[in-house]
Image (cartoon, rainbow, N blue to C red; front, side):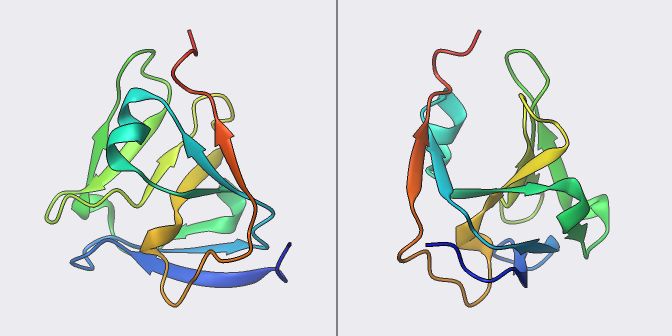
Length: 119
């Protein structure tokens, strides 16, 4: 069930990293790669034109591994993962929907993506 396109704001736990997205939530995704399994996030894919970082970049810590293409971002203070720049589609971000304010994922289809086998 797609929702009407709307703007949502989100943040890490301590609020040092704040952002906004515009989406209609066509689907949510999980991933089985080594980092996604450990952070257990539920993500929505958003084009970079529909993403706005509301805080400065000082609060962000970047982590890359394997091919060093995907860019995973974490809060320097509380360690929460709010979003990452995707590996296969680098003009899109994966947004951790559990960081969005006043958002419940109920009724949105969830697709499991295969990341573990990516070379």
